[in-house]
Length: 266
Image: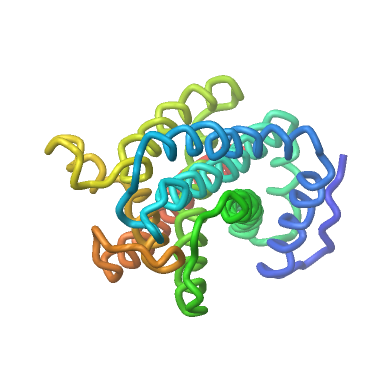
């Protein structure tokens, strides 16, 4: 087995080559696409519609509609799912010996990490945007301010990149795909439920609110509600931007350290 990376490839070109390789495989796998998309779609169609009939209104979204209120949280869940998929690819490539070929190729080792993180981030954004489109079709109201859309997209990129990097770091700790799933599941449910994705911060008990404020998901969700959905703020926008930027930087640092240790041993 060989990889199509020419000799003396620079950082950007090598990262792009690996990104393209992973994306081509992802877009050509209909089963993977369906599996990753069905859960968030069901969240909107079943949970969102059911709660909409029970909850008369919700703060933080246009017209107080619950679909609009929960939509940023489901977008975050979709983004995290794409990031987790990137970690699965890393575990699989290490198990099949492909990573050894990356390591001996005449490319910067950092390109291997950046190629994996960028492809996982792109998958996360693809899934999140599809879910957002589904939410719009379900009647979620949005703002017409183009700067708000740019800001919301920037928050989503930072969040997806941060989780993609953390998923890569976790995937570097094990050679077993089932063990990776077990570790990542410890993050999955708290990321969604210990945040303001499904209920406002003001309604939480004190201990839960502390947990939600530690969770970067809360800052993505509140930032998107303000920037894209025109909702009211529970957290100032500058704090949302700062936390998401810090989360992305922390994820990249964590991935760099884990990746360096793993490829040095390969």
